[in-house]
Image 1 (cartoon, each protein chain N blue to C red):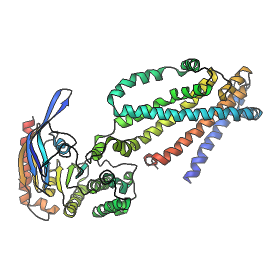
Image 2: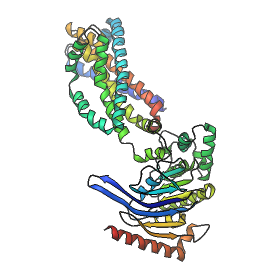
Image 3: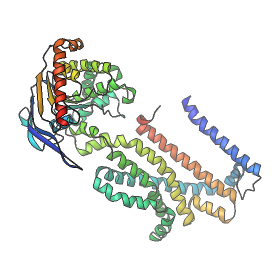
Image 4: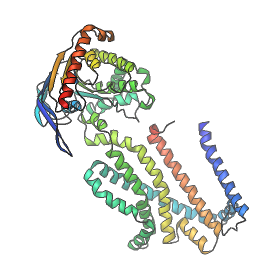
Amino acid sequence: MHINIEKVSHQYETRQGMLPVLKDLSLSVKRKGFTAIVGPSGCGKSTITRLISGLIKPTQGNIFISNKKITSPLSTIGMAFQNPVLLEWRNVIKNIILPLEIVSKNMNYNQKRSNALDLLKLVGLEEFENNLPSELSGGMKQRVSLCRSLVHSPEVLILDEPFAALDAFTKEDLWDVMHKLKKERDFTCILITHDLREAVYLADQVIVLSGRPASLQYDVKTNFNEEKKISDLYSSEVSQLLATLRNQIEIAQNKND
Amino acid sequence: MIRINNFIIPLFSLIIFCLLWELLVWYNNWPNYKMASPSDLWPAFWKFKHLFLIYGWETFWRTVVGLILSVLVGLSLGILMGFSKTIRIGLYPILVGFNAIPKATVVPVIALIFVGMHNMNTIIIVILISFFPICVSISIGLSTLEREYEDILLSLGANKFEIFYKIALPKTLPEFFGALKVSTTLAFIGTNLMEIIEPHGKGLGHLFDSGKISADYPLMFAVLITLAVMGIFLYYIVVYLENIFAGWAIRK
């Protein structure tokens, strides 16, 4: 499913009056593409995820998924956040099947469980099926959260800084998990992040947003290698790209001042 | 081992408490009309054992019924206040004001409204005194639910009801049980307020009053101890339920 954001403006009502966060933002994500969105903090990146998932409606402009205008939440979307928001009273497997309880009410429990187990195996946590979230580490919780966002086989996956709170090594592990999931489950993915290396490593398209109110500032393809490896991040080609992106972020931040 | 400790340690502390109490009375050489000692209590119990059974049961069932109803009232108000900001800001001043009124002053009012309906009077006072903590904790629990929790279900097209019983309600259960523990002890205060202030010949409060009138101090102390024991019993029932329904929140 491809995603088109067309001339979207959005503003929030605050105590100080209307706060415009997006202004005439247009961008498109190709079918089965992986697009990372970076930008200065507070520039409205999370607003984009809420708009695409249909949780809020844009003040102006339209958003299309496969040429269909979004007006309310779609069951073909999966979401994961920086906070894994696992339900503490459910064990790992029951946390993962939560979306199925909403989307596929007629599916029997064994079917739900086997769907969830397939994903758990992919992220390497099949032994933790019956553990409670409080018994897992931060990285493991985030893996479970990723499984939950994919269990109903969504066609679009929206990730809002899911790796931001993890330490550097766990983060790199999770990047590879993400590559694996993307390869196995081929979905269209939008990743919001502050980490340029993450953006370049995971995505095939990186979009830099300007400072608030955000619009499209820079759009680049990152297909430097089909099978990406962490060591690729240290090649001169990627270093150059990272430098360019860093520069773009600085431009965006200046505009914000 | 942990299970045995959970039983032995509280028992041990109770025995020490009684010994210190006995020692205090013995050391000061207090007569039992000043302060009865634990050794005075058992004869008092034994002398009135039938009354303790009858009145104890009356106090107990009215407290439990009142507590169950206050859970229903507290839950419903808490749910309304948790989900609607308008209802929350509208009801809070009334509820806080109501809770600030000493319940002892409400007792005669209730007794006058429902003349002669002793059981109902008592249960109403129990509800009035114990619903508040439950109502506040549920409304705070529901209104502070992080947005992401709602988002994961809302983004799939779930309705408000599904969000409530799959996420909001279970997530609020630990707070609910915390409040229920407070309410459980408050409930006994409610029952006895009615029984002592508006004596209608029922419940342990009445037995306490009789002890006062006949200057039977060990009896009064025995009533207090009985109430304490019933309170502890009910408290542990709540703990048991908490372990079943919100055990995930308890650190092992």
